[in-house]
Length: 355
Image (tube, rainbow, N blue to C red; front, top):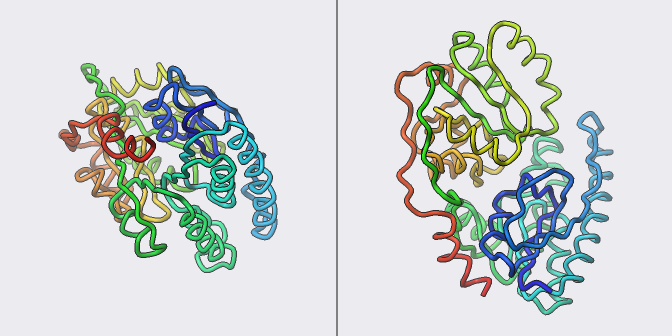
């Protein structure tokens, strides 16, 4: 039996903050999540795989999406409940989103085991439904109510930004401690080559404006830079034809998910990072920016307002033209002067809560 179950009803490979929690706990932790994609398991941590089922197709109707997604997440949450209850931990730390009905499954497992239930708020699940279902749809409004009600059942809360802390308090009456993402460790950047190496870590999802990035690249000189669009996700295939056309025109664009060692090697030799993250709630922060800052790489970020100034204070853009100018600029925005690592912040904020 493990002392703390760190859980997410999503792919662990794209949940670095959750994996980092387990890394700090080491042998105390069991990591519970989906494992269909490879990721680096922290030393000493046991992994218990669960399934979240197959997503509804992007071209399906709203009605089909709502019914299918509800059934899929209910079945997945029951699997999560069984896995957590079977581990019999003393504490359960669960990522939100997804929260419907996963938060209820986490709470039920905690009550069965007599465990402490802690939620780590990365964003709101209901805000992720807005682009697909509409902000005022019945399901989105129900999701907001459910997330607040189920969230209020937890014994303690973390969140990713001060703006989210304030919103949780005013929206749901939930008091959370801010646990900022910080680099796991700082790395020395290698000397840059003659061509600028630009890295845009991507989940290829609805919360990233890849089209704007390609517009900005198209406004630069072909061959002037080496652009890496890392990662994988649902919208990658949609952009493949356009990327192929740009490659034929002389633009050096490289895509694909990289093994852990290759990814960090790329980050270390990057001259510039680009974040196209568009927060659905305006309250979450981009985890991949932290990776770039760990190698002291400057970052240009889409300015969605909200909590973003808590992470990025220079190099902000709102249009493809503004980003294009930054990509061509001789001087790049400096990275922040962070001195604390994730371990430093985690020991101060999370360790006292998890015991």
